[in-house]
Length: 155
Image 1 (cartoon, helix red, strand yellow):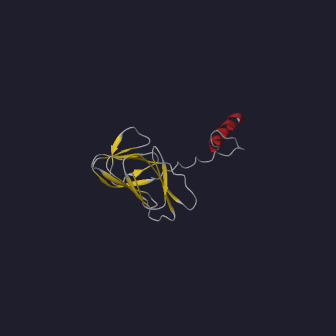
Image 2 (cartoon, one colour):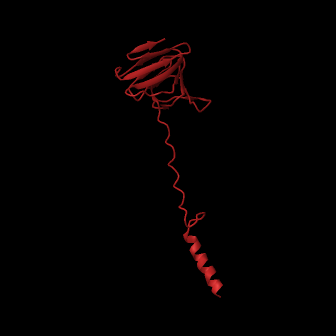
Image 3 (cartoon, rainbow, N blue to C red):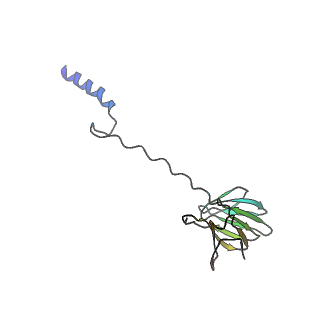
């Protein structure tokens, strides 16, 4: 009968220890918090006419709307008679003319310099920097890369 009581005491003590741990081990640390969603690199403003957006992660051209966030490698295209503005967090503003195609480039930050990186694949864009002394705009095309620190028009 003494063995029966030992078994019952052991059975009562087991649930007090975490499953998978010995008396000398500590439970595993809690999982790290989930990764934050990436911040948009820019937002669409004043969308007029047929303007489309293609996400870097997708294959379809979607109708663009005012206020949509633009992320690295997203593309924006305007049709004939259409236009849109792209506003970057640092105040840089890019005006897209009709029949234009741009891509939001990956930005490599520099200390003390707010950068805007853009790829113009087709058409015309007008770009303006809010504070050229602390901002940089890099516009790449299939043939060249241009960096500016003042208002400039790319054709």
